[in-house]
Length: 631
Image 1: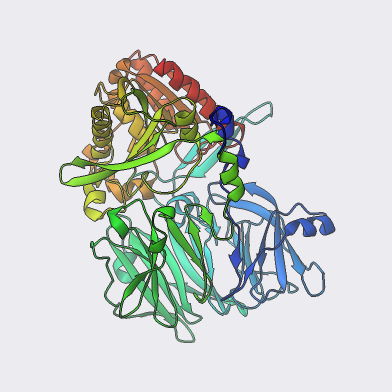
Image 2: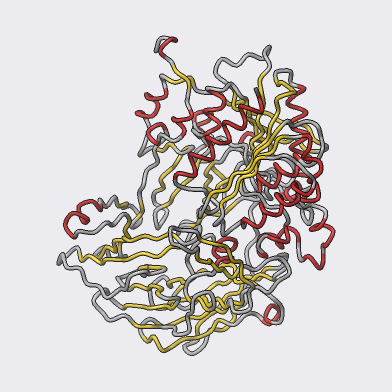
């Protein structure tokens, strides 16, 4: 054991020291029982490239090395791809630079890519590229890649094309943004004059992008068929939700109405000429014993069903992997108990093997070095429990300072997100800003999953349907009051902070006039739901024309006068493509109109994540603000 005098606290500098973070393990399944660990440094040295990622063709003969990465939005980017033949050591390629998406076929070595918003295919790396679409145009028509709102809210990906299992066909989406209103903001850069960034960005009640789905025969690129929307959806506004190939001749597509309470899973079959709808009757779903839903991962040829569930021990913050047969359900990870309560599985292609990850620490990376490094640091401890709120027992977690003593009084910081179906209380091991605050500054950092949160049943989650900014805000105030009642919280030093939706809830809490909180920090907050994107907002709030009071009564700006009694730090990036700087500007204007004294920090040309130098700066700045508040 280390001598007590040699043990130090976890500092603010440690937050940004990656060597003091648990390591993950990067592996990719190639087949049923083989995974790859390609080292790209050798390729870089031999080919004078600066590649940092790769994709292996299905036949394992070719490697596509990615370089010149340039981030666009959360998931989208452009990059260059260099093809490398592992048999001949030749690099065949006529792939242009600034490719927007690249994908090998699931069999053989066909490939598809998107360039200048158009889809291209190659029947082999040595063949000539064939252009499939010709109408692509920036900010107007996007083929094979999603537009901004589909990327962010529907697909969570930059993928807009899908190979059939045998590589015979390729499905691709066409997004039409010509009717979508644009958001514009300045990009300051280093030039004498700033430039303007324009993004088609639909907001609640405004025109949405339209979408079409096509299938191209990759052996005859002129043979293109449209996958027609079902009649019941074709006459109303709708979304393309998911695209899944069943076989080379059968395709499953989910279509979703704009008011997102009606979804159709439509099967299409190819008859040699067209893709026709196919009727089927799905089997009955399988529920956990507590009647909460779970997520099906995959099925294998023995009819095993693998799924992830949080039913073990009645603790919604855990995750375990289960196997279900027709006879029984077996938990594959529950025997790890207290040592490993948040598990996930990454299956090989035929489910013969899976890589099990445990709270970021897995079998292939046991993090012994990390454990050794933190053994000389005073690390905080975690406490979890429940608070009775009406008919619900709702979970909280507290990060407690080293040597925590219940007879003492500690300052409290609520770390909040509280968005629909979110979960802050879980068993994932993290080393972050909260670790520093508890270890060095002796601040208790707590989170609470109130009404509207996820993984505890639909009834709880739907508590805030059509009413964002109400019950989930009230519950954070209630939780803070309950924490104070525990006896070890200094009631005069209670703060709250959050990012994005958490910034919105933070602002709504501080503007409630509850008298519970002394100060708070809101990073990239929403101010009004009318200003956020259509897909996310309408999913929970429906259309403004159907719920005008729900939109109008839950704005931060309407609560501006109540900020006189709190200390408020407002933070935003000027190039936030997600929650626009407009939102912070609205809050600022409302506070100024009410003569509220507050603090603000903006980050020039930074987006929603405040990456780079801004990341360390924002946490340092919030630390100084918080310590002044608690002084």
